[in-house]
Image 1 (cartoon, one colour):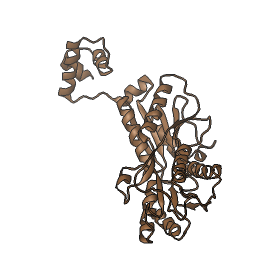
Image 2: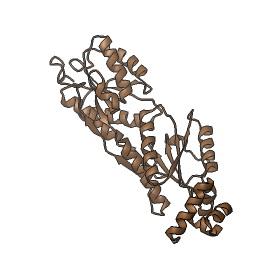
Image 3: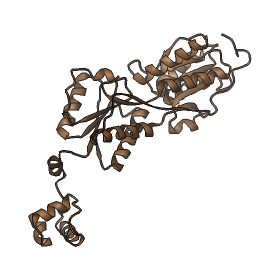
Image 4: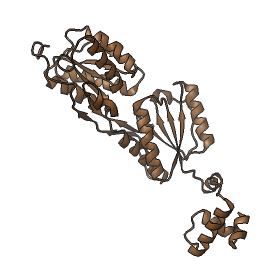
Length: 334
């Protein structure tokens, strides 16, 4: 800083004011300082400036998986929104859902100095044994059931699932089978509950539940079992990747989609429109989820009150060619 002051012919205090964006510095002086900085290759120490201000312009994100479509797309939206607001994002992925890993992630974020944390994880990992972050750090949770402990932003999982089931029933299918996600997943649980409730409300039989792990491979294995069920004419799959596996299995077993079996997915991944046939699915607005997370964080950092509870982002059904009216010989049966 002293070297910059000498070259620019100003005081070190003026260099400091330019570095911190002080609008009171006259433009001619500011330009001389900036030119001197460029000439000498000087860059202000952002860490030191952050310590002096008491804020770091950084949002930490802890996520369970980078292989999940929802997590990756939500993370992308958070990073984009944070960047537009002048914040950086520090990512800490957890390789296993254990309490020790969660504690370690919180400790690392404390050491890395962040202003806020967005948690993309299941709430059962946020028990009282997790170390508390410093009081100034704000927390927002994605895709969880944290009650009033944190502000939660999530897709309307149940609403989306109900829409999928009702779509299939309105096409005349007697009932709807369901391939659920992992048992420990909050999102999968919400979709499963809504599937069963929608069937019971209509007085329909609830078929045996099948469970996968979000992957096309698990969808394929479940699809082979579904292909052997002669009464199966409609399937609601908890995500599009498993639906892809179901479509392959049904094709290999000679069960035509949608002429014999209708299939609905969940997520509306970019590739869903290119499946054979193009997949009817529930669209999740991951960009809106990320935007609302960052908005809640920034409001808290500005000192505004952000209540605990859940903000739900609506879904919408995207109808393509994997669903059709129930085959005439089974329509309306219960």
